[in-house]
Length: 96
Image (tube, rainbow, N blue to C red; front, side, top):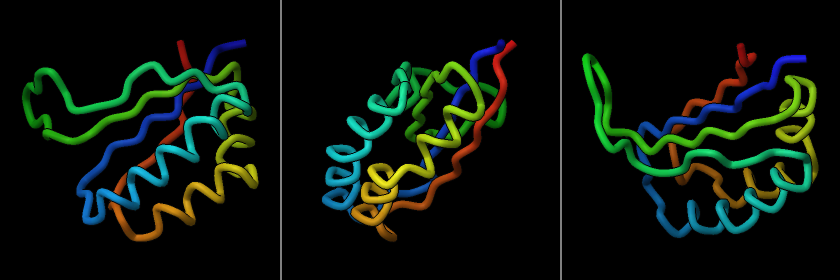
């Protein structure tokens, strides 16, 4: 079975305190659901139409596990703490 990756990019952060509260809650929630945070931060280099956006990559054993992590009560609590503090895009993709 192929791994799955949760990729989040942040277009903007309007409330750093809300983002910090989200981070405190989301990391343990994701790890408890089997996620392994591989990448978190600003890009070291961008090319082509690359954007200077905070990026997070989390590895899961399956798409189903990644979905379950997102939908878990603990992660939903983290999302509530973030509120409208950031505009971002999250996608879950199959590994190869």
